Length: 280
Image 1 (cartoon, rainbow, N blue to C red):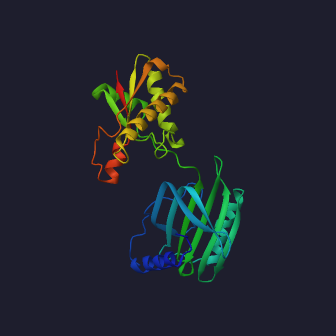
Image 2: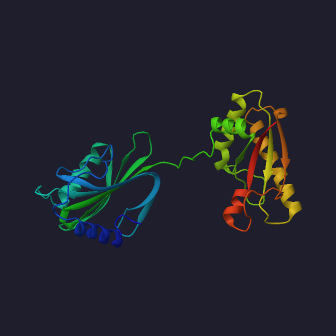
Image 3: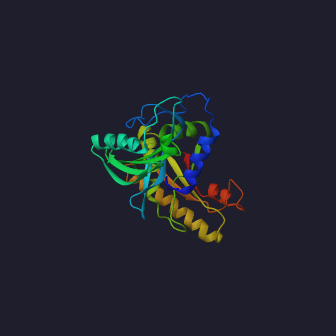
């Protein structure tokens, strides 16, 4: 949703009506670490995520979708505080962004409110996109902020976690090693998990593993069996390429013969498509 969409304007107005004048002016969240608030305002709500996407207006007709770490922070004027004009709020943030080497991209503001898009360099590279939405003649405003970054793949297991599970049960099932549909080609998003498996083996030079391939029941059983064998072999090859001695690894494929969940549902089939590491 664009931070300037009509729905967001409506929601902002409803929030204003829903908050009584006597409500406590306590912050419900924190400011962005590099973009402090206007004096006289308090935070009515804040959402921060590791990865999200916002749309920022870059012209009257176009928006730009930006992905990365996100903040959405709502501010309201404190009771009795001086009401700045929407333009004063805009200039406050434009000056902050300019001081950090940034610039304004688009602006549409009048005496009742409006919106501005700004962008500035990030501290560790990338960019920081800032959307400012002002409502009710400046009594409320919202900052929508994205620090651009690629999503960091969250690991299913770390090397130490795999070692613990192998020690306790002798095997560990990995569903984060992904393949192209019907093929033994490992997808790029599997690389981090493969790195952890290689680390597991390098941390324990005596460890030897059997790599098992398993599929769901979609397709013919002979084809699934052959596919599972090729996928297990692909994982072995990826580990050997990471410096693991070939003789420490053996492979087996079981096709759809050993399901761990109901193949009647997509969720169950996803659980059955897996690679298992078995301690020898």
